[in-house]
Length: 503
Image (cartoon, rainbow, N blue to C red):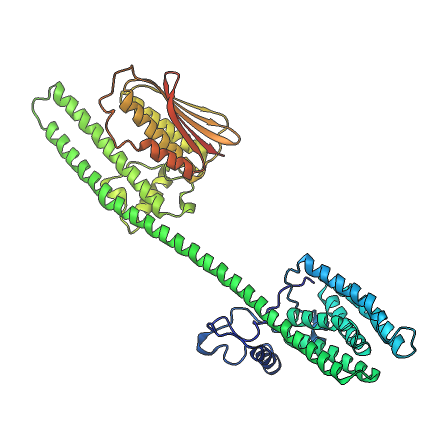
């Protein structure tokens, strides 16, 4: 049976007692009242006003015999090595000095009794010193040490023998429940008084050492109270940390919900309006009687713009789902979840219909395909490369090397967004140049590389200055959040964007 902290309440008060300081009388009277008059139940007033003690009590029947039978509940604060060393020094001092005082061991009667009491005290002390992990043996040896040490102090009151009784009552008060420590302290005092009266000790020794033993027992009780309150304070601090973490998580979820609402209300509605206007423009162009090459080209541009608008609404819906859905519901990663292009209404209102629509999309297009499969990310990247090539902005060579392994939702989304941004930058800064898109799966990492030839010196694409210039910064931030790194820059006539994600 392992020793552990007592589960009884801190002596003398509760966690909600405010700043009132307990006196010695409060400590002793409160514990005696609680343990002898209301055993196993909260003391009077504990439940009044909804104030419950912070430390749960031991509900076993109190008493020395009960603890010997069932195993004692011992408070086990960490004892520093210096304290153990001091105990050994005290024991050695008692063993060395007691024989030098009167009565000597050679004397019959009292001398022999003193020698026996010293021998029993030394043996019990050694067992008690090394019985920390065996509570019942620890308690038995302490009780024997109290009886023998008290008798030794009574037989030799002028020597250092009383130190044994002092150690016993302090340890009992600090480590045991109040009634058990009271029993051991009373046993020690009784053994001292009986032996001292039998040996004819002076009255000053009787009164002085008795008061000393009682006072040190009360000191042990006070120390136990503060130890238990320290444990209670640590528990309260841990609960405060948990509450703070829960509040932080709730605040983060609320902020994500707010961002999702803003995206939905601003961007999604704007894209829907653009889509409607593009459809109207396409209808007007189709209604023209003279459809020359310029009109045909304009219709083609409007159709492409409409397709890009629908794709933007689909991506907006995925972003909203990533902000609102639980991670378990988006295990495949919102950045590459399969699904057809959304209609303007498909961006999903805040009531969750967008989530249901996305679930239907995944069920329709990815039937039989479990979330988190690496082929889904590769398929999304291949579709992105084909789309870039179909736009006539240069061919994209897509390559996968190594054995694909699944990525987490955030990592998969980071990889897809990196490829998307890199291809867009290639279109803006080096239009018409071939682009290489490579995904390399290694045992410990996944590396995404996008490369394109640098444009001739002094030339600049028509869209080179479009955008706010924070695309690569955002990609680096995404990579860091996913636990990876991103590097971008020129390398031997090529512009390389390389994303490394841990496996």
